[in-house]
Image 1: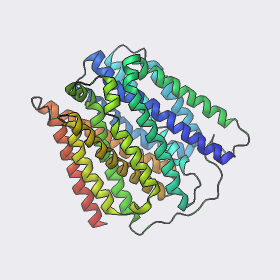
Image 2: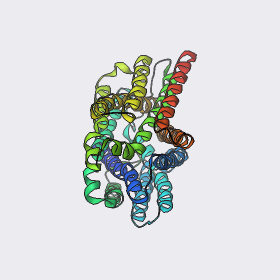
Image 3: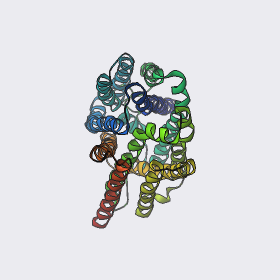
Image 4: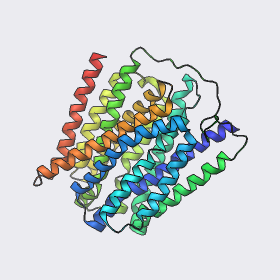
Length: 390
């Protein structure tokens, strides 16, 4: 009973955090456009700021969760997110919202490394793929739901969707964590509130080139987030170019989230991709092509097809990174922190390159997309070099 409750609690926390995060940060770009007139370049700068803080905060968050306990880390994260989101509702200036972005990012990275480690706490090697699969389906399904419903809700609620609704969700998560930690029959490690269920540890065994695959995945996933956060930051501009309202963005631009969810389901049930370079390389090529198809889409048909391919490709990159990180090593929260730090590197690099390109070539609207695509292509070359040297 305690083990099952622990698993359910972990997945519910992941779902609530994902929904709150996507309601807040994805539609923050629309709020900045509508309230302060932010264009693509300015929104890319905000995303780059988020990514720059994300890198260090992820590394710190992983170490904090490993040393102080996963439950303590979650409590700090949930409380910090609630405070930041409530404060953001009362901030009148763009500069003040940027300060909120920094604090919000630090709080958020007390949550993800802990949840990722809790997902496979004590699982034997043959159960790691199953546990990671359930976790990926949970958060990706929640992300698809949040982005799909966020557009209509933003049209209806405005700034309340960006701040007040996510704050309420995080307060619910904090209350749920407090309730679970008071259960005397929930076994946890000493000194750590809801750290992990006591299960017999089992040594992990991996193929001979496992470390090489971990390096490849840790490169591919940040590069996938180069594309993802560039896309999220320019979505208000892309929506304006296609004549979409926020409601239509939720309906037509959430397709790749659902495609990623399907990809996670397939990768969860089919282990044939484990430790095979061809699948990772092919998905990465499709990632680059589909990214360009979306950001340069001349019509809705190209936008939809590009998103389907993009979702499948990003699914492979993320799943590989988290699976290989969790399949190797013993300090799971620290590995989760490194996984998130890699994401932060991508969140920073893509928007930063895009913003810089638009600054240098303001007369070329496609400059940002082309520069990011070039960065992605360079990443593929690096992947091939790592594979050959491995």
